[in-house]
Length: 367
Length: 137
Image (cartoon, rainbow over all chains, first blue to last red; front, side):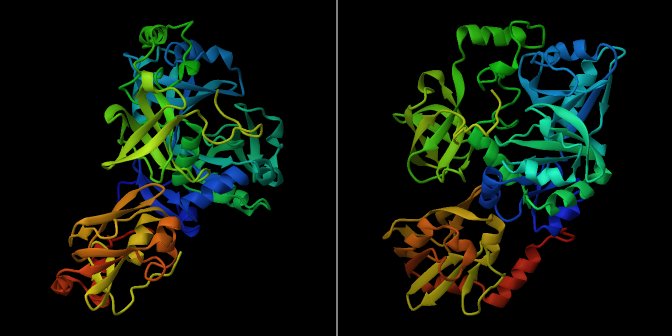
């Protein structure tokens, strides 16, 4: 246990009754009151997540924009200072090293990457960076909290200055939260409106306590509900839906790959996949009988394997088993009836459109 | 959720099952420790009534949102009843693991198997041995 890392909020999690698990080398809260209650709190009110285990990489210097344009898949010239963009870091073959948010700030770019991939991302980006472009791993110094849910503004309003409520989705600004200088961004991975707040790790407990103390009373939310929230939205998770094994195209992430421009690693492969179609495609699944699909469960049509579940859970919003799966393209159309082999028991299922939860106007999600 | 308890008078299996014995009949469930480790139970996949189960082998599954756990039979026999209320409201396993959260009843084929199980004090000592040193939580 001694080599596991703790975020600056570890003691706050323990005090809040968290169940702590090992996640990507960190001791992180997986749940407090329970995954379902936390999930529903975020969908109906708001909750706060500690995502300080995620990585922050700064890219600084003349030529940083051109360098990132040739390194990441999305068109980074479409964002200016104070804007964020979902993008991917491909390897030379077009496989996915990580998915990430790139922020354009006044004098630098900030890349927020998955905890399990910080080392791989830093190695890749440093390895490609030309002279004059500096790559700094700021992960150890930066804490990150996500305040998510329709009540997010009520939770933030009493403690934020200036009030960052004019921000549009995928915009970021500097603001004080509980007196702490923060970068506040209208981002998140839950499908609900909200913000992500970055600050010096040493200041994180002040921000956490202030958020918990606001009259909106956000719930502390663990990694368990973070996973079920993103899964209902159909957002991919590195290690489950994304890996070096596949390009972003079968995952449905063509929108985050600027293929008309090309010029980044793997672009030719991705252009070919789009032109010819991929043999498999990532879809949402919903069981039509009791049961819970899990990652690794085979998907069957007439008893024959046609794909594999990459993530699965009981949807707290819908009360049914749901999952994401790569399926042979001919079986991937919405409404296709098939079955999921759950540890030897076939469970009836249907391909569903994403997101799985109602996407009402108050909701925000990636294209 | 419930408070940590291990009632006297039950027999305990190392895989965190309990047995309440009534002659050749027995009621099975999982212990407070098991439900705490699993978290909120959201799905119970029970065996069929009439099925034969074998000591040490899985007879059903409990699932939390995040994980699946086999339920290990503490003794062999034939399933005589399944707790349908737990199938409908699986979190009864969390709220009342020794009462409303019982899982099955069994007509035991070899009640002598019970001799291998632990009493409450022995099970508590066994749990102490499982706890790692220096656990922060």
